[in-house]
Length: 95
Image (cartoon, rainbow, N blue to C red):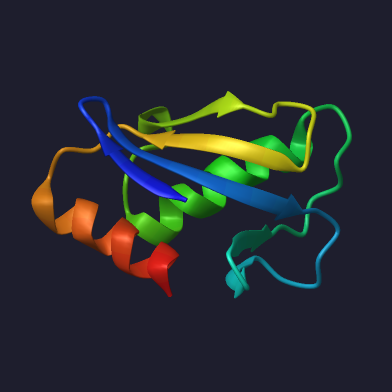
């Protein structure tokens, strides 16, 4: 699910740690983000934010995990207001 709010874009994802490579895939209605890091001591969450930051060319500080710090299902907030970057995020997650 992707929702545009006054704070930016909110996206529900499912993280898949210990993957062979970092990538975003769509599995039915679920957006999966595969991360190579292990889910130990927040490493997967940190790697997730770094990967999303590089993918969308936005600062790491503009990406927040709203829900799911210790879960595979996460709600992510992208605090971006630039139309080009907003459209880029929407396009990638709509796959």
